[in-house]
Length: 117
Image (cartoon, rainbow, N blue to C red):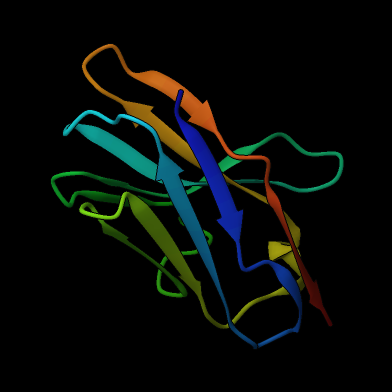
């Protein structure tokens, strides 16, 4: 059973930084994509950034240049460094894993990021 556990959310002032971490436990395929999505109140969940096990990245336009995703394949962890945070980045951030050739989809429980103006 794969589980994802996020940490690192919190309250920060606009312009500040936070780093989110997600650790995956269980048996994972060597081919997978880990990443982050977010959901603000009253809005749909949206992609923030993803990174494949091969190192390919994908970012939402709104975070490009401010957020950086990285991962440690040996430890099955993915990090999201968030800089120059804006109030509109306020949301619950969810870790996501798309695993193996069948693309099994897993979600963490989410961590709240609040950016005050």
